[in-house]
Image (cartoon, rainbow, N blue to C red; front, side):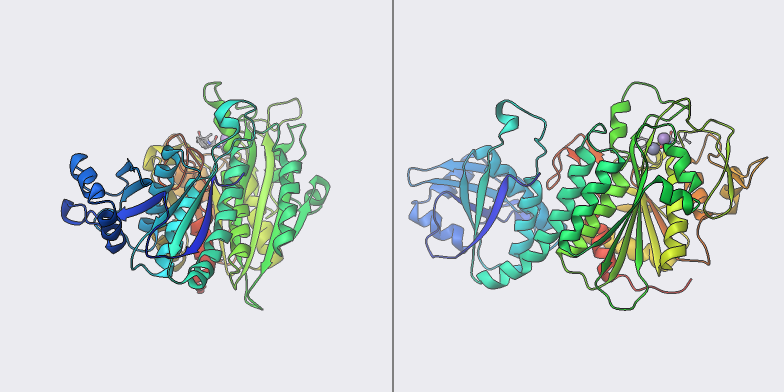
Length: 493
Ligand code: BES
Ligand code: MN
Ligand code: ZN
């Protein structure tokens, strides 16, 4: 699915074309028009200033008023005290999209004075992201046919803005792909179908290889296979390669792709189980990031690897107490079949290291309910064996507004997953569940490869809309990973 808002840049004329959208500064709690606004207000004999006074409009970020003048419609959107290029400007674009949506107008022109091409492009990006909708399964009414609008953006230097925007548009493709994948129900998006959708990325220059169950068995990926063995749907692993960076060692991005998580024999309660269709959110972030990295033409080598399975109870399903040998050779006692994500990731991590010797490895997963207890639906949990990599991820998180908070690892937590019968067990005790899950993954890091794990269980889905993220699959991680792929400098541990 795509955006209800089509972005178009047009050359700026002195007199703006109606319907027009103005951004109004809300510095010092007072609404102040820019020069485009002042000129328009004059031509309307002060109608804009009067409307602002009447509505006690303070131009706080996201505040808006819609003025239906005889000459045409004017929408005022508050930009707050200041808007730096990045999250602020994207949010501003989101507010513009929201006001445009409520106005029911099919098109409008955003007229802003004196802002740089990068600033304008970022606002456009925010509006485009905010207009995303997933309406595939509605057959009737408004939801089936959302109002599509064109946001014309009047700019001084059309070429410069168009160039700056191209990169954002590439990234948005990745965010939308991730949101689509997360939104799809599991009867549609099961591992084989998911792998087929990944194959389509070859259109944008990504090399895609799919491993089926027999090929994974040959690799010794028994842990991953054990999770899928109770399902009628066969497991898959998809390897996506973007060779933008010459001979450098690649960054490996690894994603948990549990297309549905019933818990398996350790079955989950029925209430809310439908949420487990998005237990592939980590893999969606990786697939979306690969799309975004290609779309933005990032000049680095990046490999995306996703383990795609369905966790079901069945006569053939893995059972509590079973012991399985991982691809790494280490053995795992499965105490709880609902702690399945770590089993999938462990084998994919081993595969990534054995086949690609990555400079660094970052995995994303909707891994634990416990991370929701720790951090809520505000930021993901970050675990890493290397401070430099953790810092780089924190920098990318702040730059993109996809926030994360570093969490601990360490020997005292590792003890909690020692098993009485095998090298480790797949759950710790009652407490610190996100940390013991991360420790489990850390045991599959070889040769001190810099590694980081993002537990995104609180971030992949949102019931509430945010300025640039409509309710539903968020695409969390795509922007963060794309920024990281571009900026991170590998260093030995
Ligand atoms: N997919 C879940 C984690 C999850 C919970 C994601 C809520 C999104 C929202 C994961 O596979 C799981 O079931 N984890 C268990 C681990 C437990 C058995 C140690 C959990 O968090 O309860
Ligand atoms: Mn589970
Ligand atoms: Zn799960």
